[in-house]
Image 1 (cartoon, rainbow over the protein chains, first blue to last red):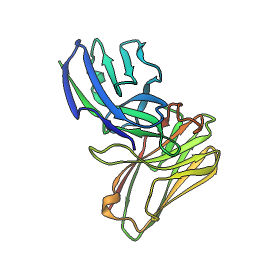
Image 2: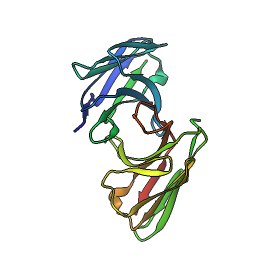
Image 3: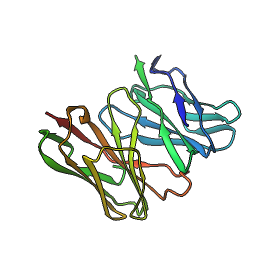
Length: 111
Length: 115
């Protein structure tokens, strides 16, 4: 089957850097997604990793290690508006391609 | 604005009511999804449609009935729901379902309360 683990909550300070980890187990790995979800709003796509390494996109970067079943989302120069839930989602082939979501990490950015 | 709209945004219904949730995407995508999101739980995939054909039903109770008349519209028909069905119901779309490597675009959701 598929399983995803990520911390429930994290707190960081405005202007700082925060790393949100995600570990996963799946068959037929086909990529890992990160989504951002502000309270009361829809999730929005942040990044997609299918090969090992770091993908950088502005203040946000995402890293993947397929051999370790591990990813992280790195947020730099934190802003108050970055307070949100960050969802790790894994696409795998378990009797058909399927993307499953982790429970999300709630990030609180304080002044 | 993600290009995926959902109506209504909020719905309160009794356990004996019948209601429908509507989703429309303006992105030219071929795959559409229904998810249930409960507090502090992962997004639960309910149904998937690819090119108007239902490709997945994740053991969802029959009181939830999906309908996909075309690639742009998706409905979720609700009847005789239970209080534990109260949740945020999210619709999403993606380019297609073939390899699940496409990101999904989510609608704003319908906040459902069953009394």
